Length: 301
Length: 301
DNA sequence: TTGAAAGCGCTAACAT
DNA sequence: ATGTTAGCGCTTTCAA
Image (cartoon, rainbow over all chains, first blue to last red; front, side, top):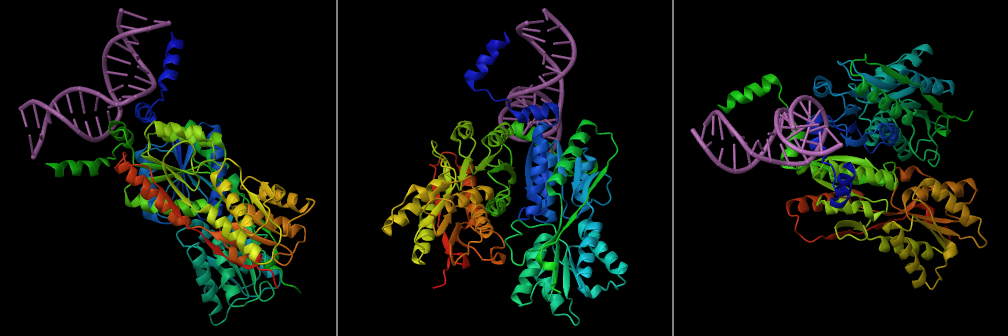
């Protein structure tokens, strides 16, 4: 009887070997989530969203941290490929070539937060242009005259789109969008700090800044504090994406907020749908952003 | 010749199937790092330390987030077991039973940050008693009279040890270590907030607090801000473990700092040594902590 | 209902 | 130096 087998299983504490099972079925129950900076709370919140959906669908989520390093990213992609993971959710560091392998190997892939050029796959984004426009317009509306922008690496779609939103806002307020108010940094704190320093040291410095991610915003504010520049009285700051404990920071930071958890959920839903039906055409989900006005952009009149 | 095979491999874009390889060799090149809260920057820094060593030793690191939930933790342990991962580094949510399976299955396991009761395995810790004593003594030395303690769940070793260090410091300053100044919370922000509220609402409220992790410290400070209690003039605060951007928070937070990155490195080294030599007796590495004095504990005289 | 066997893709041992 | 084969533990198909 089957009952006796069950009994024996318990007695011997039998655990099925998933490796053999995976080999036989040529599929696993593991999803890889490859993110570009584990130190950025944006990604950690997103991962929670992915996890909650994945658990419900019977998958386990393993996290891989590429640290914005294309080489580490490649290594993790290779691992996901070699282990024949059931699916991959990736926020790329910007090199499209390596990811193609996954797509070619017919492993379901969803791009999250950042677009993948050259391949047509499921994608979950926020409306970066709109968010950046919101932030810049807000600064202009509060009486700041020369709004600068600290953005990320050109190859990363969010950096490019947020810059575009900034430029669009300037133009619609009849300001010229000059290059000398734009700095390209690395989406990290130190990069934000250096970019801010460079802006302050320029010939005709700005009186406010829009930084295109949370860590660079922190770096920029640190620079302003170090130089004794008063925020928001002398200088306005708006960032893209919140930081935790934003309310404990003085001055508290105005930011473009993103639905990070829902971003993760949406990606997970797309991935499970693609696994269920590999033939369906890829779709793109775009979530909208909101402006959180706090102290750093509210110039006293 | 071998050269012709190499050539064919390239032409066909051959990728070895790691699943089959794992089955044959009954081992993988994947380490699982199971952490209890991905939202806590303490763990993210630790993971970086693990990763850097692992990469050097030819392993890839996948991260699993148990969110302090024993059930999720069990699921990930089961996955690590089923996938026959090469090793596991775990910061447990406190249930010893499930982890035994890993040990019984002879999968190399290293406990990090939190001790595992009942099993004798490689462990990496910080000197929690010493750090807590440092923090409490510092508050007493700065003229605070009634020092409270917000600690974590009893079953977690760090919570117990930090509480012990607090009690020891009180006794060596001839203060009674009374239970009504101690609160057990959950190592999260909301828990810290509620514990602080409970302390303030008690009959004989404290004039300072030592919180045993970073998130609860943030929660406690939020509560103090909401109640209009002046830190540090009316109330002193010291936390255990730093938060990012501690310098941007006003008042800036005094904390017991931990070598988080080195903690990860040490665990990774222990794990790779155990993989190389499964027979060696388990060892425990204890790293020391330091006191970062900032504004929140410096009462103006 | 229960049993037997093939084969997933790889590696290691053995034979040529 | 090159070729052949057994077997890792599972699932699926086919046979009894």
